[in-house]
Image (cartoon, rainbow, N blue to C red; front, top):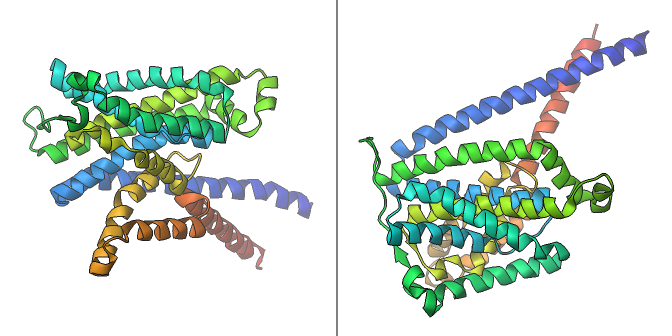
Length: 354
């Protein structure tokens, strides 16, 4: 009977622990959202601009995480979809006079179709071969944008300059604050949609293909369609991010979308945490702020260290990977699990004492 009572009481203890973690997670998300809503009112214009870029990059990293983290397809070319989204917005605004807000879904849909079509021939490629194919896509896209025959649309090497939009409806916000809230308002439903998709049947099919593709196919999962759709949805997210990025920066040029951008996206996904919804946010913070900190550290070291920012960046990246091999979210999960286990142990010891 003693063993039976322990078994009966173990489940409620675990349920209480799970409820406690869930409650703290909701509190944390609520506090983060409240902080996000007030930070542009006391931050400087430049820091507000940086935080807006964090939001934009988080959307792009979320798209890449769906492809790489959840579906197992490695991409080194998502900077190309980011460039396509930015140029769709720039061309529509500059050449056709379309309102900037109306170009965002158009850019996403264009990248959705482009990513789906690119994903079809990529079905024959896996692992490093797919990575090389996407790497080639990232290399060729800036060159196509520089092509003289497209210069009347893309602006060639000079790019396209756009004016930053002012806040509508007489809102008491400057352009940096307005763009921050615009990107935040679009990021929240996109993250919510990604979370629901991952938890749905389609998300389970994506993960099944990543872990056991043969077993997934034997259970009736259409691996070809799922991979292509995942590639398309991933490009959709990145295209929306590119569109918003072009609006926020106010300028697009081919050299702004080099292979380093694609590599930065992959670095952000790994640093934030693969197969994690909120890891995209931590990864975006890394790729926006760490290069700036590397430059500042290089300046503090004096004139002889002017060429060291990338070396400092590499050392910081190595330190992150050594200290957090599963990413920032993986570290937070491990810490939360240890705290829950410690609380469970303390609760059990109090109940055992007479």
